[in-house]
Length: 237
Image 1 (tube, helix red, strand yellow):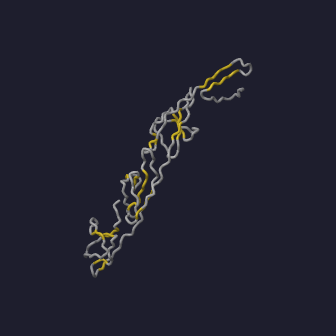
Image 2: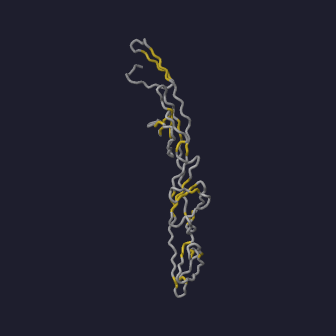
């Protein structure tokens, strides 16, 4: 094959022969070396969404199998994005070809939870196992304790699958308990009692510390006193 005054692509582990085109008198044999060995397999730190291993400067990585836009390692762990595989290879040197690439398969996040509120009890309808965690502010997360979680009327909690040694954390679910109107009672001044029967779904207190359940009957009232009423389903957060 005659030369074209252009560079010639060279395969690894091969031999290429050159000669003078005019008289075939001068010959050169060019032996190309094999590729460098690929790096050892990398693994995922699912909790921190990084590689478990530092990526040295002798290795480059990319998100495409053809290594387009490859980035050189900086002797630090790198971020992994759920669902986006990574490819690694040993970088070429002045005397050796780059290695073949290895693939790190990065799985997707788990499905978002789908918990619901039991409006009769104002707890979650489902048991929240230790595989999940919840929060009121997206910062301080509490691991489930294999029990339902209290949901005060009108409040919001966030739930997600916990990260583990083999899975990422999920995106969070936003769960809001419906608001409940407070009970309303009035005074029968003649008989010194409430006008209404106190529902068994409500409770009352004279000090907001000790609460009594309604019995479906009116309660006596003492002049110059204050009584507090609330729905019984109001749990501490």
